[in-house]
Length: 435
Ligand code: ASP
Ligand code: MG
Image (cartoon, rainbow, N blue to C red; front, side):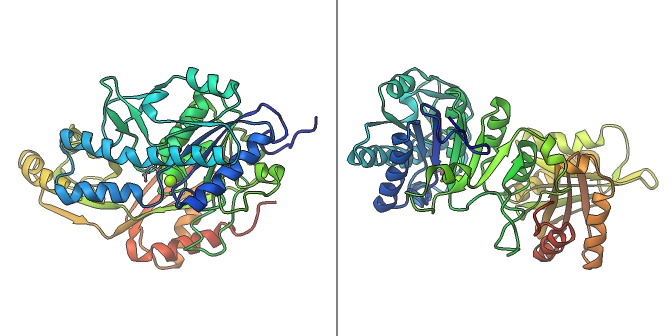
């Protein structure tokens, strides 16, 4: 039987396929009916189907908002346990509704909450990590010809507490379920039709990528591209789950072979990519703040003395820069998430500076990080310098730089972000498909 070359086995009967639907796709009973019709089409084409939906759009915010009305507190372990119990109900409603909609389409279907599978996690409420997934119950249902609908976002810890995986966590649930079942492909249906060279709201010429390497996707997700939750990409990489991001807005009855080839495939084969663009995408992130300690004594252990307490407070540090020293003093700058800015400044004032000494402490929340990403950077020189010259031509001052094998990031003034992204998109010819 002929197989589509660049798509999941749409014609392969018995292929095990996982679909994930985001909140927008699940946003009303009408939309849920459309999801059911699409899933029914795949099931009738012979696929074994597992579906992982998010909560109906807005629902998680609504639920967490109710909790906030009762307590402004956000971070005690007791409170976080309750937040997870509350937020997880959104997905429970979704799976039940979708199973009913499938049954109404004449498709046998059963829904499960995370604890019923079970999807076991650690006990880090509001950001739990999946530890194991028992596939027995799901396999038995699939063997009996049922479509299995499993909650995204939630799991259960060893004390039977309900946990959640963090905002956007349903992506990770879907990929983890696909990994546990060794699915042939995991399709993430969302409100964009794939992964773009950059955000089309900023650069209208942004182009959808037909494929992106897993490593590039990982960088894009960690650098601010919001298409997939980063942990889902990590999972896909670790278990080599074939992953595709595609639109949930196509009509449900589009040809299944077309559908199976649409969107963006996250690929593990890099050889074919090597001939392609040096830079595949531009990511940006407005969520960081910069902190500088000017005139700290330049001696062994200073970085640890500054950043040790920050790490102990569970604050993630991103870009770090230490200058050359003058007269035994140096300047030390780093970035943290904007939400952690005030806490970090307090910590430096109260616990760090009294011990290390520093002439001045300054901070800036009006910064952004712009990054170029591409595995082609490994085999090409001059990519970073082209980035710097492009920004210089636009009169944009670079405050910090970091690089890795496949990305270069700069920290610049937030007000130049859009200008920088547009200029870089053009400079690296991203509006044109690589030859
Ligand atoms: N409903 C959860 C959220 O809004 C999980 C998800 O949608 O992926 O974050
Ligand atoms: Mg999402």
